[in-house]
Image (cartoon, rainbow over all chains, first blue to last red; front, top):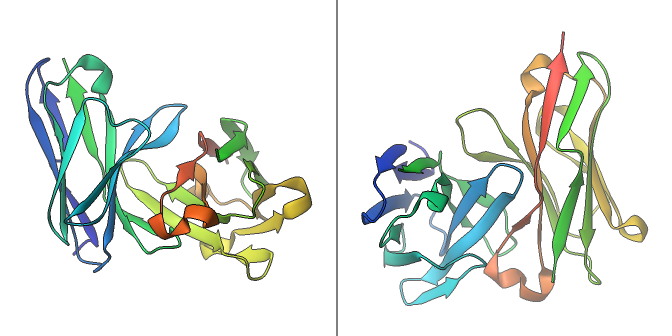
Length: 111
Length: 116
């Protein structure tokens, strides 16, 4: 089994719809992250969490929210999806140094 | 604020040729440095990391990188490219000043093409 599992892998949704991306990990790390990948921009941090009671905004958190349901689970929500949120989304977990383990990604298209 | 610059969004080499992917960072304090590889339709996989030990770091699949503080660089090299090396490569840093967060700052990525 993969260390970090994301569901769904692909999703097409309509503008204005609410959508949730889910992530679970088996590495036992406390730190979990959501990144967004856009061509030519690399990966940018949306939110990160140290534990279920510690959630922090990243550089591009507007329009997104997260929930840390357990040490192993970290979900990302788009409350009202818009087309410029079309991107590849990655969940990751890491140790304190930053050696991260990534999920396979969720390709989200907002039409 | 930390930033990472990868010179060249696309690099093309012939099979068997040297691979050189460039990465420069901005920081007054030597950060932790990483190279990740992304194969098509997959997540990112760690190639190698620098965490203030040896400046020449060896990674998987024959890749290595050298940390040069004076040049604020962490270029990735491989002596002989293989077709299977075709992928996108990302340089990333985490800031020791805030290193307990594990947050990574990524470069823009470099797509490596390997020609037969």
